Length: 257
Image 1 (cartoon, rainbow, N blue to C red):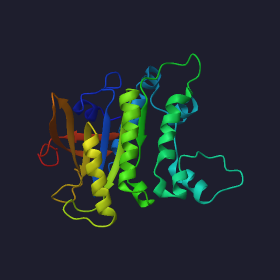
Image 2: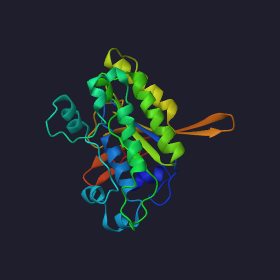
Image 3: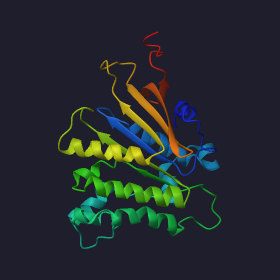
């Protein structure tokens, strides 16, 4: 968990907005470090994790973290085994045109499964984290079906259960250009942007490579205000290092001062 980013977002594991849909996106860069931040952030929401640190293995073992390994589950569909006991979440691969109902049913089933052991510590609201949504386009799923999936997840997790959703989407091409898969990813990104309440968009520096500044992230808050919507944007530069990441206003890095 990156303390500086939590401060920017005005959130902590003990105090954060529920019912929020967070979109993490990148363009010619890698926003995976932000996914790691949110995973650690939400797992630290319980007192034990805050004292002892986050252990993904322990979180999975006690049912706090339910993980769907997309690649493994995809192979079980594409190369079926006689003893296949995998999830049915990836059944859409047999016919992508049918949509993502089977995948949507996975978080729905998790939310209603009651996998928490009796007498276990309270964990807080449900959080759905998807890394990364753009892969579905490469698997032949239409942009419309992916947006329907995100909409249903938001309706169930954010609105109905007052939990949070974090999704990663990638755009590899230039912002002004796009064809084929890039055009699909651009349309997906625009659709997701309209659905979310918070976006963090990561991209490289416009001036090119810098050893001490790895890129920039634009943070955008969207809040309903009366009959309309208010938008607030802030731009930060960042550097990822072994123990986390640092965020700072453009031009204030020690490398340029």
